[in-house]
Amino acid sequence: MLTGDVEAKGMAGTITRETGRRLWNMLPSAVQALVDRGPDLIDTFIPRATLLEHASAHSPLPSDLFSRLQELLKRKPPGGTGVISVLQEDLFEQYTRVLHALSKHNPLLLVLDDMQWADVGSISLLFHLGLRLAGCRMLVLGAYRSEEITIGKDGGQHALEPVINEFRRLYGDMLVDMDQAEGRAFINAYLDSEPNRLGNSFRTMLYYQTLGQPLFTIELLRGLQERGDLVQDQKGFWVEGPSLDWETLPVRVDAAIQERIDRLPLELQRTLSLASVEGEIFTAEALAKVQGMNAQDLLQCLSRELDRRHHLVRAESIQRLGDQPLSRYRFRHILFQKYLYGILDEVERVHLHEQVGISLENLYRVEEHLEMNAVQLARHFEEARITEKAIHYLNMAGERAVVLSAYQDAVVHINRALALLENMPEDLESTQLELTLQLSLGKALRGDVSGPSWGKVINKARELCRQTGHVHELCQVLGELSILYYVKAEYKKACELAEESLELAQKSGDSLLILLSHWYLGFILFSRGEYLLAHEHLGWVISFYDPQQHHQPFMHLHASDPGVSALAYDACCLWCLGFPDQALNRSQQSLALARKLGNTFSLVDVLCFGGCLFNIIAGMHRPSSLMQRK
Image (tube, rainbow, N blue to C red):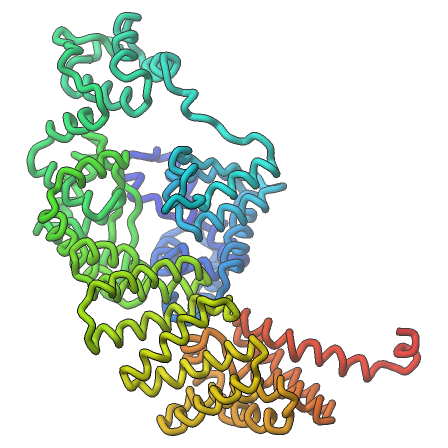
């Protein structure tokens, strides 16, 4: 909304014209903050096409700012390419800096609802932001159901619980117990929020029916109003209607919801039932395709009937994928969605999930958008029992999570895909699919190469490679295994695996794998003190490495850039071989290239080896008097 996404809410009447104008006027400040402080948030949190559309439509947006935005997007490739370029911590820091910058223009209120369903990545972002609020004109207000936080998934600790505990330790008692809003006080306050002449007897009976539970109370009052049991007099005060009958009113929330749904025309009930299949938030264009309706007709139905008239859904957002608009709506309460989805039988659910999944698949079309919505697509195809497609999108979601450094999420997605794979018949196709998943899981577990899980995964991938006869994948796995034994300081075994990997790579003729294998041997031999041999292998990598040609494929294949690393290791080899000037030159080359490529992992790798060497050599060139004093 701070970057101009206010049209849908304005059309639906959920924000006033004045609020929309104030938000729209924040657009230049938001663009400025993104360009200066959060460029990597574009395509991760904010679609570039939508941002450009809003920026070009805003007047007056400083021309130099719009030019800087365009230049940034030219340099920055679209997201979802499979290239690891930004760590999750960097995204969190950029997100925080942008909000800090915006809060200098206007105080901000960030509202997070239904936090019990937040994923690990979102909770981690909340924690990072919460630690950086000091001195910032921003209030974060989060709502969650305490009973769902107490016991997490599968009986373990919910990811939000330790964050809440830490915030309480840092900031004291900042919890507001919404249960305290129940009871007669809530009923009286809610009734008196509008002019009324409802007496004590009415309020007592309403409490008897609902016990003051907010959802029960609100739904029952809306039911009374829509049915004519409560009416407005000539002065606009709510009063009891002539036919008020408490005995026929529902006493449970599902009954209250059912009553509201049943009063709708059948075509609107059908629309809501289909929407419930996609989830609490649903896409109007996908719904139109499944229903065989014109998209504009459905949008009018959602906005005018189900939103403004019946208050069952509300406009959430609108964005564009090329020339295709995507209009998002949300059920006003998730219990509406749960109720509607719950009354569908199993056969209906299977068929509707398939139709919704295919419809969304056709809408997203482009690979980048499919990757961004892979989790959603996987769910639909899993519920539709189209297992192979579900596995495909879970693997895609895992690969994207690795790109965003969300390794825990990646492991969850890929393990889910492996669990689904167990239900498929054991044949060559399923074996090849398992190999793909195990290699993806290996990337996700790379942060703990010395742990048992990573080694188990890589050994399983090696076994599958031998079963399928895939030389390319086997070569890759042997290289990963050599790293495992290198980390465990079993250098002889690591060297044997790297040599086997190089032999297979040379037979396959794959230049990337050949470069990788020489790199494996280079740093392993360096660790064994065989500096001359290590220098030869690393020199081979350096001679054939071309950053423009090899950087992105390396990042996708290995999650780091061996070409840059080879320069740093070779600097160390040259130092140990007695060539300090050449070592200094190599070290400077590696640092310059790592900074130019902008990959954090590779830069850290270079600083770890080449950076230390640079300091040693630089110290040698200091004046002798300084050296003596030191």
